[in-house]
Image (tube, rainbow, N blue to C red; front, side, top):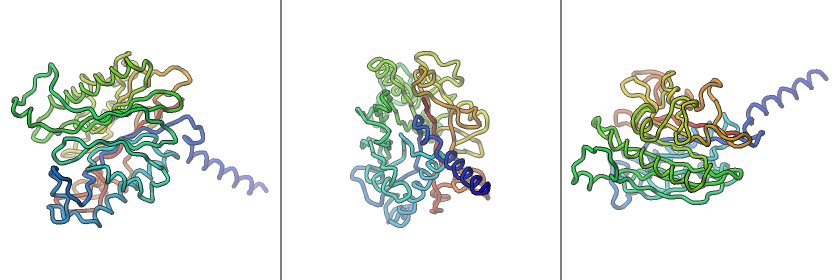
Length: 356
């Protein structure tokens, strides 16, 4: 009898551990994942996607595409396994079009999530966009908007007028929704590249655009809770986030018009979402406004989730990580040296948890 009772106790304990967020019903996972060139095998008119065609540089076949979809879905499913619930919101970048997202959310590993898609075709010349996946059982969408990049700023740009006229980059996606009666706005960014060591001024402008739009939402919906997420191509201490998004490293530094930047302290503690020449960086950030950082009692607020100290998580399981060789302990990506190696992404996903 005692043995039976002990067994029942263990089962209940494990169930409670695995489904902590779900059981409480007051927590939500908000995440971001750069899917590293999730392209289908077809040409999109007007886009430079030729390397991801069957006869292109990457010999991108249906078989490779299927493996890529499977791998991306596996990561999302593993995050659900850890948290006990699907993401309420998952921002994604480096996706070619809506079609690849429809294929992704239909993958058997994550089909039960019933993720819905918000995506706009953007102006990027390669055709890569940002998008948002969301659980309609957890969030009701009110409106969405694709916010274009522009140069209407006091920032001193290095580009000539002709270069500005030719410049194309990803739009910023804004989704306004309601979670359990509370208004939220989510921004998904993929700020301009660092290729050639350039673009600091362009990323600064991207941060400024996201912040300025967030301010308009806070003015229109007093008390709205906002998360700005994305591949910023910058670290949290760089100008795009620290100055133009008004990101603050510590909670007690966050004022009414500031954003809390939880991955700043995580970077200083040695965490990374991608690596360059062996150095850890966290470009995959999520920042939250004061209303979500210092929420009124009984409403949703960001929670410490890593070592009960850090307010974010870098999801970096061993299967997503190179276990040996020159790139040991860095993300196991799709291609290496031009060869398909059936990996996942060159970025680790990140997420935060909000709770009443």
